[in-house]
Each structure stands twice: as C-alpha cells, then as structure tokens.
Image (cartoon, rainbow, N blue to C red; front, top):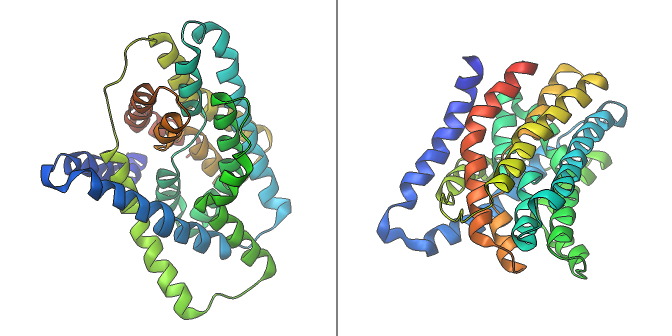
Length: 297
C-alpha cells in the first residue's frame, strides 16, 4: 500500500495528460511546444542540478552503474534473440519496436526516484541515466540502420546526456553553484517533472497494432519483466546497498521512452506500431512497477 501511495501522484499526472490532450482547441502545436520546453530546458536543468550536487565515490557508485548497464545489455541481447522468431515476416516493424524493449522513460525515472528516495535517489538515477542514454540510443539506432554516420553527433547533441555529463564534471571538480543559479535551476527542475509526466500521458496512443501480437508480447515482456528481473538478481548478486538496489530495480522496470516513436519515424520505421508499444508498456507499468518495488522494499 505504501508503494502505491508513492506511485499514485505520478500516474495521476500521466492520466491528467491523457485528459488534457483531448481538449480540442489547444491543438498539436501546444503539446509540441510543451514537449520541446521540457526536453530542451526544464529536464536538462533537473539532470544537471541533481548530478552536480552528488558526492561521488566510485568505490560505491561504480557497482550501481555496472548493475544498471548489465541489466540494459541483457535486455538488448533478448531483443536480438527474438528477432529470428518474431522479425522474420516484417523486419522493419521488429527493428522499430526493438528499442521499446530497452529504452527508458527519463521523466518517470527521476519522478519516481525522487518520490522513492528524495534528492539522493534522483542523483543516483541521474547517474544511471547518464550512462544508459548513450548505450540505449546507440543500440536503438543500430537496430534501425546498420550504418549511421551521425550517431556520435546525435549523442553529443542530446540535451539529457550533455546536462548529465556537465553535472558530473561539476560534481567531480567540486565547483560550487552560486546561490542565484541554484535557485533558478531548482525552480526549473521542479517544473520539469509534472509537465514531463503530463506530456507522457498526452502522447499515449492505443492504435496502430495491425499484427505481430507475438512480437508485442515478447518486447513488452522483455521491458517489464526481463530487464527488471536482471536488475533484481544482478543487484542482489553484487550485494548493492539497499537504496542502490531499489534504484537499480526501479531503473530496470521503467516503461519505455516516448521518443521511440520519433526515432522510428525519422529513420523510416513503423511509427504507429512503435507508438502502440510505448503506450501499452506505459499503461502496464502501472501494475508491474509496484510489484518489482515491493520485492526490494
């Protein structure tokens, strides 16, 4: 019951986004502008501010990052193992959907980590995201195109990755953020989570499934069962401290990134099917996240 109380406010904001998206006169331009504001300004502020104030100790944070990245690699491997079975009839659709099985929703990541363990939890989650974003983006692009010369440039322009990297530099160097800067960043960061969660809800689409039910079940199971199970057992095997174990399991059981649809469309994939997988996984995660957190609570 305590875990449900922790999760209810954030999923309520997602549901509010679903309702608000149906307000006709706001239109697509409103939500497109809001998504850009969150993605390029508010959320990077939160990532930078969270990581810049971390007290880094590689001897303690190294195992956390290793466990999170190993869990992601297991998920990536599982998607490739399923390709000969579920991707034979429509390789393009399967390649489009593969990313939904290992990418993660950054807005929900920090929102839930903050609810679970406050600023310390958000900082640990930001560290996992800093390593996870380039790994997942590289694997997603590779699945959709065997050759892409712009991959490195795209990663270097990713505002979430840049903000996390700069925050880590500040944390390692011991640079003190001025009080005025800290207040501004704090207020921008506070706005990022509720607005980000509402944009997640606004982007939900439960149409686009024209076939491939086996593929849908497989990729959704990898994301909501396979990766969190790997995170759970890897974290226990590595004997992570209780908070780190909870954060790495939360990292593993997050629903997939809303931007999977954008990447699929930009690279000539099956956008509607990808949007369906994103929406289905987000809705089902309301059931699976409490289960996984209860196992490590």
